[in-house]
Image 1 (cartoon, helix red, strand yellow):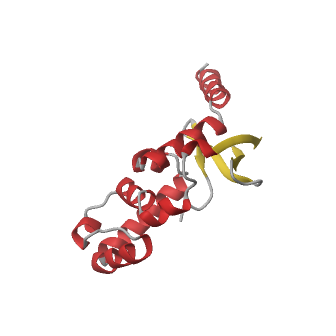
Image 2: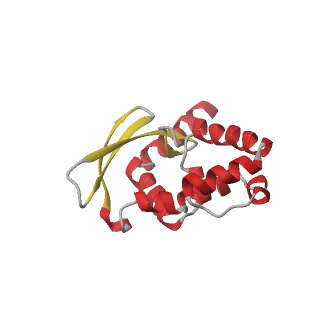
Image 3: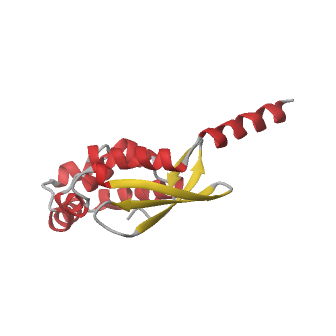
Length: 153
């Protein structure tokens, strides 16, 4: 009986989750510079990679602060680097002037066009209104939501 209930719960989760809806939530969070929501929208593997980066950052906060200032054009001190959480690092990245210059001007320029799905993986296709191309982003179903499966860095 327990297995049947777990299967029904799993099936309900899979059927109610939508790769396009979850991608839209992540995109909205990027435009708000909401590091926590973007972090939760990353696959477990991406979250683990960020945790590894955080460990390395604590070993050389002076060098990391310099790199972030040079590469992302952010003003951050070594003490701020040392106190960052994973979500805080994501927020620094997505709110950096460098990252913001790469984004389309407004959120309404990005549309989730469609997706293809195979089991617990999906490819979500995005278009930008000033271009003719579709961009595919891999996602995977983890813990009841679709998460970005491609490398975050």
